[in-house]
Every structure is written in structure tokens, then in C-alpha cells.
Length: 347
DNA sequence: GAGGCGTGGCT
DNA sequence: TAGCCAAGCCT
Image (cartoon, rainbow, N blue to C red):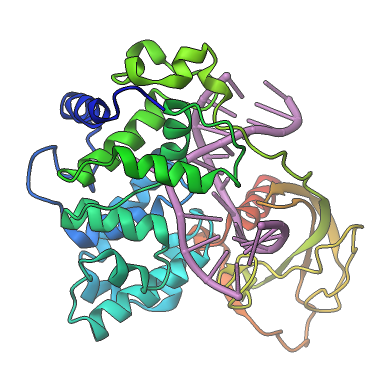
């Protein structure tokens, strides 16, 4: 354990006052708390997603839906399309459910306690604590992947993740100040993303280097230790590009599961071996146009792209005929956009 | 507890 | 360059 626990928060807050990143959802250090709506929206977008990726989505969302009432009134389809490309699409479904709960059951106001926030869709232990601290000034123990790394190094905690999480939480609790808990949390995350980085930490720039047991070991990058990952399996599939009258057939994927609720090209099964034209939307003269690859969280996907035109006099299958010229506005996940780009390259 | 669930940046 | 990793949540 670091010799002087009480020195960590003041040193970190001083550093934050001078070095805080300027972010569109963040109030400058020392100023009144930012709009809870913006804090909530940014925190959900930032779940497992880096700042640079989130920023343009955040700007687009607040311009279009500036508060809970406007977001609660959005159509599911337009919300899902606006989220396309950001990933983890359950977040978008929960975002809408949460906005509607706030608008309809909480008088348009976000609960201002960790417990109240935790009960809302899409808000887990981390996000509830972060919003309580950042938007409402509550003392809350905020632990994300950055904080895990910073704390595991400060305390040189030897236990591998995920088993070591309770010890990390206890250690974080021991250095969280009563005042400015929101700034403290954001300072820890700025430190983790810019200085206390995973591979090669910039310890010479670190404001708490002198308190850091991991630095003292000479190998801070060794913390936190992690259990080995499982290998990702390879799967194969077919994406179907069915044209008719300068339009292409799109479908809505099932509400839950992979890419749930998103607009997409029709697909066959994603299996261990290439499925060929199984489950094509119509019986047509399918031609293989190329292939696209994509990595998901837990498997890799390699897809054949097959194209055809709708045979004359054949009844149209279920789905939307989307104008090919405006396909960018359909809001499809990335693997389908890759297939779209492939087809555009062949025109 | 462990696995499902996206995507892009970095080394 | 091919992993590794990320402001996690839900079941």
C-alpha cells in the first residue's frame, strides 16, 4: 500500500486543474456541474468506447435531441440509425428506454443518487457512480478500466483480473475524496488514458509517481495482471445484395442478440463453414461479388457478398427497398457498410 | 461467474 | 502486424 494515501487525491486534483481535457460534455474544473443529460448521454456512449470515437456521435445527438424530452419522443428507427457504427447496439435500445423512463416516470429529471440511477436501463455500477459524482457532486467510488489500471499500479496489486476486482474497488474507495469526487473520477480517467497507459506508461509525467508502488517496482506496465483470453473462433457467412429498380433490399434484424434491432443486408447463417446461398431472400441467379471480413467481440467473421436482381414477376420479399444512392443514411452496422463499399467499388 | 455483445486506435 | 485494449451492461 502507498505510504501516504491522503496525498494522492490532492496531487491528482491539482494536476487535473491544470491538465483536464476539454470535452463537449465536461464542465471546466471548479465550475458548476454540467447538464445531467449531457453527462448521462456521454457516459453511455463512452462505455467500452474511446473519447475520439464518441465525440462526433455526441455532437450529433445533442444537436438533434438536446434533452430527455426530445430523445424520449424519438422513433426507435431513427435512434438506431443515428447510433449505427458506434457498436454495442443494446446501448442504443437501453438509451431510449432510459430516456422514456426519465421523461415518463421521473418528471424529466434524472435521479440524483447512485441507487436511483442504478435502477435505470443501461446504467450499471460504473455509470451510476460516474453520473452521481460528475453531475450531482455525490461521493461515489467510480471504477472503470482506466481506474482499475491506475489503482492496480498505485497499490501494485498482484491478483489477476477479474478475481482482483474487489481489491481494486476497496483500494479505490480508500483514495476517493469526500469533495470533488466527480473531478477526481475524471482525473483518474484522464490519467489512465493519457499517462498511465496500458503498454508504456509515461511515468515521468505522472503527478502521483512518488506515491506509486508499481512505479517503485520498476515495472508498472506489469499491472494489472489479467487472465489469458480465449481464442476467437472464425465464422463464415453470406451477405445478400438484392437489387430492384435502383434500390436494394434491407431488413431489420431481430430485436435482441448480435446487431439487434439494426437495419441490415439480408444474411444467411453465420457458421463454422461457408454456408453458400442458404437462406437467400429469394431464389435468384446469385453471383459472388467478393468478400468482407469483420471482427466482433467474440468471433471473427468472413462473409461472401452475393448479388442478384429481383427476377421479373417475383413477389417482393419482406423488407425495405432502399435507394442505393442514399444508402449511407440507412444506418447499418459496419460489416454491412463494408459490403456496400465493395459493391460501390464494382460499379 | 462467465459469456454475449462492436468498433477503431495503438503498438 | 495482429493482437491488445477501451469511460461496461445484461443474463
